[in-house]
Length: 284
Image 1 (cartoon, helix red, strand yellow):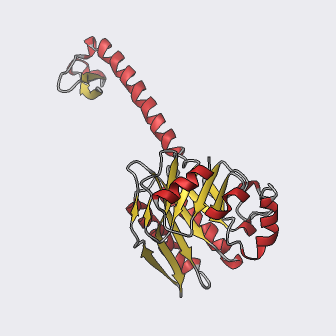
Image 2 (cartoon, helix red, strand yellow):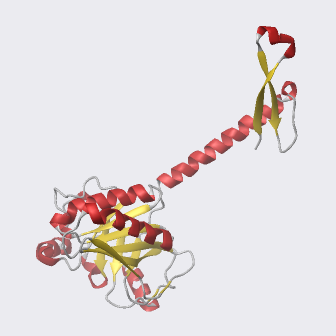
Image 3 (tube, one colour):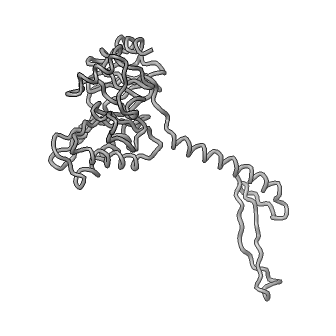
């Protein structure tokens, strides 16, 4: 690509009139073309500028719209896993670290168990956030954001998922956490969050959260289990539209859950080649 270089130059013949003109060259890797003969070079420069601008816009657009996960995602928690049989149409959401908010401080525990994946597999790093007591925005918010950003940078995954079963008093903190994580990591990273089914009512607190995806976990549902279980088994959907695009399902409940655009599958056993194939067969 060329660059137009111009330098202001005083004209001695017109010095009395305090006039100046510009001496210009089209710089093309060391060759200078006098301004009077650079029409062709200028046209080429305009064309190249247009191409570069188009490429830049495409790059920005790609960063603004991150690649979405495949339709089937397998959760790989803190246990050994062999997912080498994972086909191109599926991905893995692996526990990368646990961030614990306790006694006004933030502690990070990385993953310890091995996980074997095929080359090129879609990888989503999951950060589990645990808060057994009260949380403080003043002392814990920024360290928690720093910890999550560090995990994302270390994992170099295609996406990030935050898994936080926040209590009612912790929801303002969670909203602030998601907002700051998004601001830190930018819009170019696909950001997912898990959700308790109790958050999926008609007046969900999750409206307006800066995430690309909400994944309701339709297992281990606590007190909401009987009513929600009956609704899901009869083919019904969760009340909030925010909770309908994706769904988190335990392996044994796959047949009793409605179809969604994206399904996350949790297994209470180690992932093996046999287990992967069985789940993929049931999610076709």
